[in-house]
Each structure stands twice: as structure tokens, then as C-alpha cells.
Image (cartoon, rainbow, N blue to C red; front, top):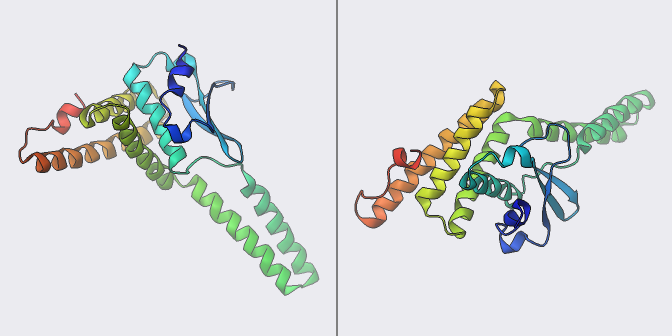
Length: 211
């Protein structure tokens, strides 16, 4: 079984008919990424050369992170915002010339909405929160596929550590570090919940989760 076929088997049943997995064709592609290829189809693109260097459990959790992004509907969309912003601003300038108040308001509204969408798309805090939410989904998916909660956290934490070690760009490395810190806090909460449910503190500690 090829790696792409193996990953296909890790898709939840509800995603298997419309999520596809392909080798990345771009020059110097990211390790793993998403692309919307149709109105109801998504492609997970993987740089196999980098991917094969990762431990199996790390691959699994990074893959489920991308599935989590799909399930959370945080897939990057086509960049229509720049075109809409240009049209809106151009229309506003034109309406200033002809002095049509209603059309001017419509043009300003279009450019304002497009500008807000661009702000959201490029807002680093929102990107981080989306990634943290996808990490939580990845933990849930791992447990659906037979991982224990501690092992799911340990595998995703190890994957993020490996990404941090292999990332040269400071901004990107900081992004992974923030995700890892959020994951540690989530692991602490999960540990506390497990301890409460078991009536003891015999569950695995956060330190062990990342050991």
C-alpha cells in the first residue's frame, strides 16, 4: 500500500467521497497543505520527500490536523477579495465623479467588506486560533482511529516539536511553538478530566505526554 493510499484510509467516512490526497506538484511546497479544487471537493497535498522523513505517528496526527481544518471549514478560498477591493475602490472613485450617492455607498460597502475579509485572512491571531482548533480536532480523530488520549497528545506534540526543529523561518517556528504551548495546556485539561473521572491522579502527566 502506498503512503497516499494509507492516508486515504485515515479519512473519516464522512470525508472520503470528497477529500482527495495527492503529491504536491509545486516547487518547494509546504510539507502538507489544503486546496479547494471544486465547489465541494478538497485536495490534501503532501510533499512526499519531506513527509517520508517523519515518524508514522507524527504523520498521522499532522494529517488529521488538516482533516480538522476541513471539518472546521477553515480551508483557504480563492483570493477574490483583492479583485473585489479593486472593483469597489474603482467604483467609489467613479461615483465621486458622477456624484451618485447610492452607487457610491454600494461601492464603498463592497470595498469595505473585501478589506475586512483580507484582514481576517491575513490576521495571524485568527490563523493561530484556527490551527489550535484543528489540533483539537486531530486529537479527537486520532481517538476515533484507536489512539489513547495520552498517545494522541504525545504524537501531535512530537510532530510539532519536529516541525519546530526543522523550521528556519522565525515567524513560522513561532507559530508552531504557540501551537505546542496550546496543546500542552489542552493536555493538562485532559489529564485533569481523566483524573477526576477516575477519582485519582494515576492518569499520565503532561510531562509524560511530551516525553
